Image 1 (tube, rainbow, N blue to C red):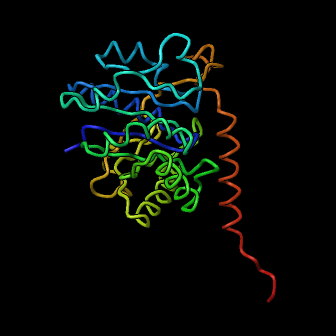
Image 2: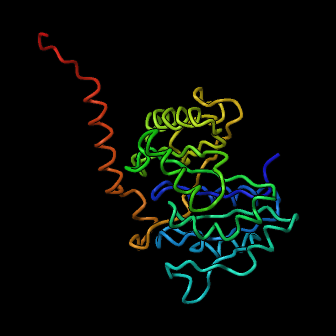
Length: 262
């Protein structure tokens, strides 16, 4: 049975908010009463509060700063979060800002959360500079645990390069994240994949361990500089292009064999 409270944390660029939003809509589709609290004080462009109207229309109770505070990068504690955490009739999703600075907003609720049915999930995209391998992922987890005063109990594997994501990028990235999770003795709870990247039944992918649920993502957030989202969606993300080239360079380097005489 799923924990009633799920907390999504992750380093900058992990896709944490996209995952949290898609998980919230999934709970709605299952007929659950859901509340989502936006505790992200780090990233001004990709926060769950930006979809407050769409969430409310689906019956979700949205807990986020309003008015002028909605766009402020301040540790604003929204009234009512504690009440929903303690209300057994609601499934609660917490979208928490990246790294130790962002997780400080969560630490205020740590004494309450610790005694409730909860799970803190670390969303990892290994195609970001800070979480490209085991050391970086481990450091990010420890930093967030220190700031939030809670333990990461599961991981969300979210390997992607934005619009440049391919099935191979997903499979290779998931292998890195899965192996890191095993080394840390932390289970991978979800593998999240953007809709349309991989064909077929996602749950039947051969590289998914038993018990790992595939969360198919629908893009919910677009940066504010996308003035015409539908027309601009096919355009490639410049950052993803840079990261993709780095991945290709690493693969090319690892495939080269030194034929010089010893």
